[in-house]
Image (tube, rainbow over all chains, first blue to last red; front, side, top):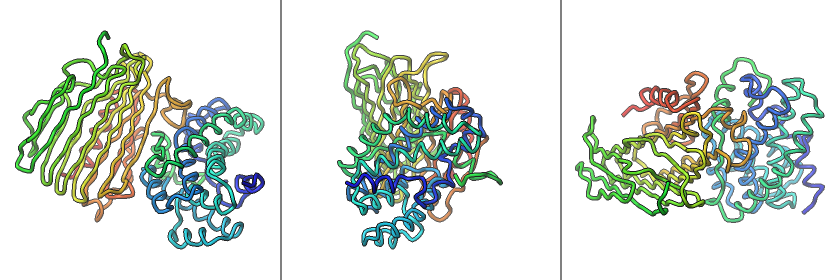
Length: 220
Length: 250
């Protein structure tokens, strides 16, 4: 594996459109569920161990070489919210564009051709990681990190939260991100049927509420 | 609770002629044929004793054969309690519904009492033209009590393909953040109502909000899922009943 390739893929400046999404943080802020760094931390921790684990395992599966069609169907079954399915495919499409330019490969071309409207983002990310010479753990780490990094960045913008405090939240979650990435990669090695399906009722519920807002700062 | 842990598997088989060729109670899972209000065969799970306790391994297997219409409900809530064993209790629900078959699986709530640890797994296999209404409700703790550890997994396949796969984990044995703003946000009850109907392939259900605490969403197949959270069991049931009336066309 190339540690530097992982940094390129995980970098918030990688032009894959993730900055437009709050990972549910915008709805949680509006509902008063994130008011400060402590609220952000428990939000991020919950997201990490639920959809974070599930998405990390999908990405690890793709990086491991599992069938992307089966992974995409598994992602659909694990995403009951249509707003979140749409966001995942939109992000997948944007990531695909960036990944094909960065690490051109027949595997990415084939995935792009099979899913013209976008595959689920973790499936694209795992395939891109594989193309970049990275492994399942790397892909899972990347997803675990963006699962909490997105809401943290959004909370800074939405609440004028001190960016030092937001970054300290991420640092405190680092050991749990490692655990989630390891669990995700271990599950992915056992095949699609062993993938976790951890989910979060409020994320599913508030994603639909958020999608109905007339004006919002973030796409999801 | 002072008894050794137990294993029990109850079985139900429903036929299109309204008959129940198999209706087998086992241990705490007592099954009774009861009078139905609609054109269904109805089976009620009668909790004959407190279960599941730590270490118990309980299962209910239900087969709804082609063309059969079955309603399964329960006489009381299922209460997970700590047992002598520190092992988690396991409760497996395995369901299959054949073509033109229909199952309404509407049990009472699952209550996770303080100190208990239950892993519940529900697996549903649907034929392409099968219909399903399935409700699950998780209540964290009896009144005013902290919850035990509760992990529930619901896996639904239709024509062999995954339609819904969802795991929920709450309580002291769950990973962190389960009570934070992403997962439960202080709510003490959550529930799902799943409706699968091949007719939704032509006319999909539209997303609909039920106040702040419930939403109905179309899945990626011909199905809709209601997701609800509530402060308690009663408020949760009120929400899901409202959804049930609005969502179930059959």
